[in-house]
Amino acid sequence: MVNGLIGKSRFLLTFSLVLILALIVGCGSAAPEIVDVEVVREIPVEVEVSKEVVKEVPVEIEREVVREVPVEVTVEKQVLKEVTSETVVERVVIPTPIPVQVVEAKAVSERLEKVAVAVGGQSWDSNYSYKVNIGGFLDKWPVLEYLVGVDNETGGYTAELATEWSIADNGKDWTFKLREDIPWQDGYGEFTAEDVRHSMWLLVQPTAAPSGASTWRKIMGTSRGDDEATTMARAEEVVEIVNDHEVIIHLGIVLPEALFNLGKRRNLPMESKARWDAVGDEGMGEKIVGTGPMSYVERVEGSHVLYDAADEHWRVVPEYHQLEFRAIAETQTRLASLLTEQVHLAVIERAIRDEVTSRGFEFVDGVFPGIQHHWTFWGNFHTKPDVIDPDNPMLKKEVRQAMAKAVNREAIVQALLPGAKVQIPSYVKFTQLDEVVWPGLINPEWDARWDEMYGYDPEAAKQLLAAAGYPDGFEFTLALDSNPALPEILDIGQAMALDFEAIGLKPTLANIEGSKIRSLRRAWDIHNTLSGSAGYSYTVYHLETLFCTCGSVRTFVDPYLDTKIEELNVTVSPTERTRVMREMGDFCYDNFCALPMFDIAPDIAINPKYIESYVFPGFISGFYTHLEYIETVPQ
Image (cartoon, rainbow, N blue to C red; front, side, top):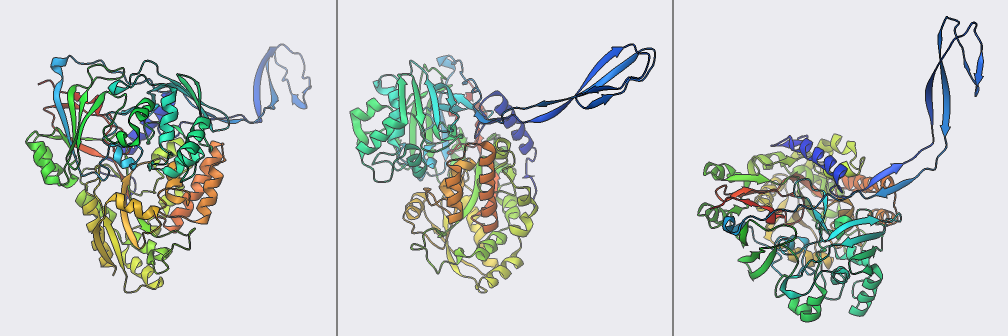
């Protein structure tokens, strides 16, 4: 078994220290709560008393006898027991946010003409922010801004379009004070509280199909199929407008970790109400309009997205005039574009890292292990017996364990991810990053039992298959889809197929885009299929979206997990929330709710002739965020 890190093993210590610092200075990374607990206790207090005595005198003080020894000068130490009776209080405290990173603009003549970034093909090539999976936000980050930002170096929450915020003791009501004098692009006026209400309404109105739709409906108190009038009425109740620059958001569930949902780490960008009123739903797809430091120029589907950088902006003026994302599916073509200086940053498979660095290029890693790579056993819809395919072998726990033990993760990492920062074991959606925020979340037994439960052992895998009634294996679909930050995912899938064949299984490799997988799972119509994922989220959010019937992803659902989600939705105490999440983790660990692979930091190759520095946290979906802060080399 591989314990800790493969590659740059010092990573875990570094990011843990960074996260702890972030929690002290700012809002932390994932769920910025601090718990103050006052308890009843007895405190021994030593009190020194100097006095002259001539004989031994027994002194009785609150049932304690202090004996004085007759000497010329005696120092008398009285031990007094003080019992402090206090009310036990446990509350969520939201620390002051990290100050927003404001960068002084370079002179126009020193700014690079263009920064071009080559990424793999995108499954969500669209200008809509409320009709795409979170993976479709890679090309939204440059234009759109959020109530709460993320510091690119520490991962802590920063004040972006909200200057400050607080949460009520009920764990539901959030107050945000908004930044003033922020103009919308294209002349749609200034950002106000009306835009906050509108942006939340967009995610639940009839045409919306956002990532995490079920969570947003629960937050907003709406249901699938609600009409525009119903959703608008709910938005008016949920988002209370105090004045133009202050709102109170009344969540439908207890969610002390809501800064994740309400900020830049998820899919609640601020959208202009005035624009919607002017162009409607159809017009919203024509371009991206925001308050950010870059403005949308054009999108050519399957080719590129182009932006102009602002010459003035309240937060940052990029050190270049234009930004371009180029969608290039083939690694060798991306490499050729980098070599010929058509692009300045490129996502390159780590297997050819040496070839890239030998030509003078460099790699920069995300600060955190932002890619949680795992595979899903589709069809485990145990709360929906009417949609289950009874012939699906993946419904059996022994089969899922056999497939988990068939995969040689260590060999895959060594062959396909040389030099990468990789964490094994990996627990699906339970990370060391979350453990820092919720101490006790990760059960130490998970690591101790890893070899027995998930470790590579093809012979044990064969025995498990035989015990499940499949001594000769079975056929299944192994779905492959590209990923912008983990281009190796296709090669990883093919390597896994060989491991499966070695234990007698018969995988059929099929190229199935993420959007197709999404449609099938939402219809409960995907069975006996294994598909890969390479994203990041925090524990609370993904427990609901992945492991609850109420969720929008539903990779593995079970009545026990549903009960725990219901408990989580009404539990305010951080310690109790940690307990519930850990119990869900125990269930998923023991029942093989997913096939875990590893956590890995995203990286990207840069041309140091043009790029001096690029720092990105690496745990925000789309991964290559904060491009506006790139430091360039004047030409």
